[in-house]
Image (cartoon, rainbow, N blue to C red; front, side, top):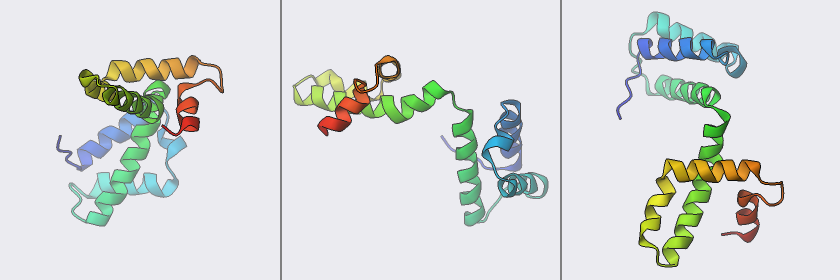
Length: 131
């Protein structure tokens, strides 16, 4: 997927962030001002440094707009799925390679991890065992 960073894309991101009430919570005055200036005066940024800074801002806003479950799926569920998949592969289960990227399995592991008692969560058990 190719991302075209232009003023229209930034304006859409800003509008969505404002609707979800994260624009002012997540970004500093400087970051908001920079995005506003680019939207107003630059059709398509060409400076690599400016593009890099804008990309960081976009990631920050997108992460803030992500639901808590989706965020946990990325930070907890996906690593757990990779570890479990690797263990199953070592045991000889050839179809286990697909588990690491299966969104349903990742979501399942995330929800199971959320609902477990602290100390018995899958993520903590694997971290202690250094698997």
